[in-house]
Length: 244
Image (cartoon, rainbow, N blue to C red; front, side, top):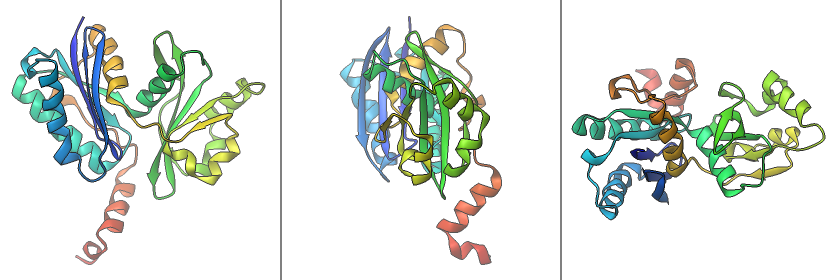
């Protein structure tokens, strides 16, 4: 049994959740560009509602990415402050995995594979594929970032399509708005599923029970993009810096 707080601000959504010995409670808001103003108050509100303090927690879980560079850094910074202050270990959780689990929790009768994506901007998507595994999910491949039109050429995607030739798979996440993604011909597309702290809290509880929590000093966001892509994004946002 465990008491785990989870936080996520990897997209326009901002969410926190508590998993107290399997009992979930949470807060979820669409808070684009106001994560720094909302995330900590949401944590305080949630802890207060359960009459808990940071010192009552066993660990803090967080959405480690992929997702918005700024959102991941904001969440990481807050988690570091909370974990250092209360001397707690942390549990990084995949945002894409949390999306797949959120879909399965909302659709308990569906066992088809889930292909979760997030719009990575710059005409790219973050993606990962998952299957239900009892009350959790299992990744079918590593997570990637690439242009939508390149997905069909990826071996994990080809295997997924071939294995489900007579069936369908479930497409979730904001990356499915790209026209090129329609080539994958998913039977069900749910664009508005976001990474969710509640799903992360469930995933984190399993990691905790398996002894997988880590020191906050060892925790890092997962951007997936390389340094060149990061520098390109910075130049797009701050064109005047290119001449410095």
